[in-house]
Amino acid sequence: MASAIEEMMDQVSDNRWRWYVKRLSANDSGATNSHQAGVYVPKHFLWQLFPDMAKPERRNPDAWFSAEIKSCNEKRSLRAVWYNDKTRNESRITQWNRPARVLQPDQTGAIILLAFLIETSGANATDAMIWICQSEKEEIAVENRIGLIEPGEGILYSPAGGNSSAEDITPRSDKKSCIIDTSDIPAEWRIKFPSGQTLVEAALNMCPAKNDSPDNRLLIRRDCETALFYSVEKAEQEDHWNFT
Image 1 (cartoon, rainbow, N blue to C red):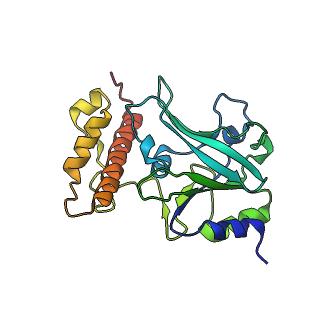
Image 2: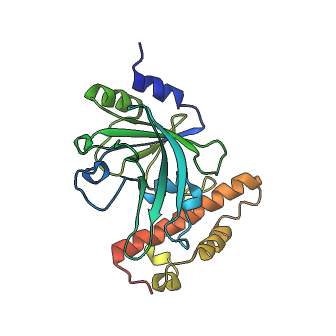
């Protein structure tokens, strides 16, 4: 007989679903009592789930979605947000503990599985089913499906086939066309972070995809914009650029 976590995973395993799975850090669970609220999700993962958030020209872009936390029979409206103002540059899913607390300090290290429903290709996720593992048996059930989950940024997983790593954000038509080396980043981008319009124009030049359908062209362009943004961000962090 299948357990409750196995039944949930079966329920969210067709090609409309994407899973984000990680082990909760001390900041995620609230054990550190820091100002950082909510579960950390790397931007390059969050943007695949909520592509409308991949807009660096906007201040703290966000997206709300309905969530059912199956492990404790709670429902929430959760907020995915990219904090990009002033000195902050991090993305999280917040609003877990209103009205009642869901994340607890003693859950640090536990596996959390967030299954996101994406009804239309290229659109934001609208709903989520979530399970916070309460026992080793439940964690084994999750890892039996997707493999070992180590502490860290977690994985983005497609239950209908395959997972996505931090590098798997490039366009579907050409997996390497929009990841650029530091040496290839335009000089003006090193002085001032490229605007959203600049990234759009660069993506159109690099991935015109003229023979694809309109929907696929949009997906390719958005993936390319994200890959370009991630390339510049990574170079900035590694080389300690000071943007104006």
